[in-house]
Length: 361
Image 1 (cartoon, helix red, strand yellow):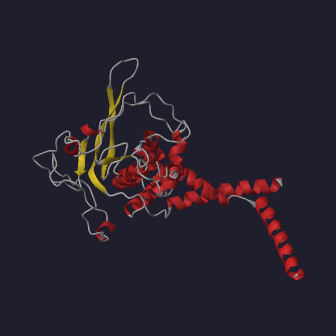
Image 2 (cartoon, helix red, strand yellow; image 1 turned 90 degrees about the horizontal axis):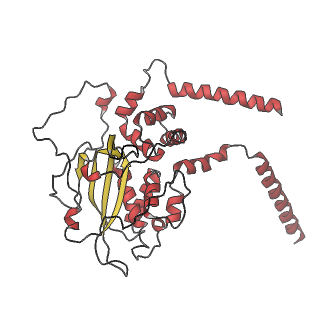
Image 3 (cartoon, rainbow, N blue to C red; image 1 turned 90 degrees about the vertical axis):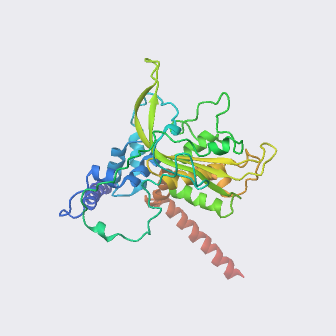
């Protein structure tokens, strides 16, 4: 038995060497640097930060490199590292209204305060392979405008809020401290802050599928993209020893405010309702999917019937974590020899009993 264990350990060690060699690839090809991954694969880096619950572009790029581009494995690595970090305090609520916007679009109003700002997006490309990218390109020079963007742009949904046509966006009096799902287990019924926290680090593919289902009729939802904005937001903290707020830096965020029809119920008048999404980095698809699922999970509190999968909080939230889901699926690769032998013996016994019963007939 000990020889087998020792042999297994040796095989595992050699598998690490093979993994490192496969990650490095052809030795004649220049190795990817962390700076290259961080700068040129920013969307992949953003996804790892979102689902890894840690805003650190350099570490997310390192995790992607170590995982050979497997974003789910990179998320696992980043979360594992996150658990080793001390917590010095909490930041104050982010003021996304003061975002230094690089992109801001609305699908509900053509003319919005500050205008539509397309920014960096592939929305208007033809999705044709650009073979010029096969070769390294020279340094790009962007054309500069004489009219820079304002420091802050007003929210588009304020236009509806001024007429009282959309539900209020203010927290209720005595709003409790939100649950920290990285330290406390998910409990039901889950509050909206807990749900949003879960969705913010949930698997993008899972949320995208659920969001798609709501648009196909599995939640009776008809959404409008009220506003999608992306840019830099200041992170503020208020240390007890200082007693005043200080700015510790900026992070890039994508925010989505989704508008949904609502015919009214016993608990709320006819009005537009909100779905909210917020993601690290440039991540419109994730923020939009999150906003759609957030609204679908509010069905019961708004007095609507909750019958679709995307409206079932336990189903949505329990299965949104890609690290847990991956572990549960991939553990099937591990040895299950004893379990299978027991199942094999049972099947043989049942087969023999069935054959005997058939012979007796």
